[in-house]
Length: 237
Image (cartoon, rainbow, N blue to C red; front, side, top):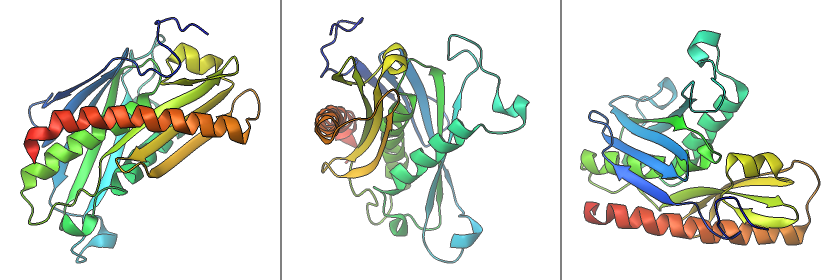
């Protein structure tokens, strides 16, 4: 099957990560994956939630939002609706627990890292782009803390995979995602270990063979993303 952007089924969209994208955040990037663009800012707060007070352990939490015209049709802001919708809440939790999986919180001290992922343009894969960009922003923020021990245990990135017309495809655009028979998101570490797998048979069930094909595609895609992260961060120790 030919994809509209000319990619083969195994190709990522063009990826660019711009460091220090905003002025004030301790860690900041703009991540672009095709037409999807997300600003990831990490702020450091010298306190922790009440359940960690006095423990010497830090915390990482995330917020995610989509600007009203990040999509083709204007999306009403959560602040106007007076509540966070279910999708937003789910993605926030996903970003937070993904980053906590690769950061040793006991080495942070009693600090909270606030990760803010703001989608300024959406064309599929916003949650996976947010995780990939958030890792780089978190890395930059932690390096500025000059801690005695490095709390970063491994690299981290995420990617979407789907089955369209019976064929596994890597890094889906919005149009592709809308047509996918099966839709999956993989969060994977630099060692190739899995933090989270989200999979749904949107239009049909899927076989173990298809799952393994999608998993293999995701691992190869994440490996390329982590190679890019390492290249961007190579001068940061």
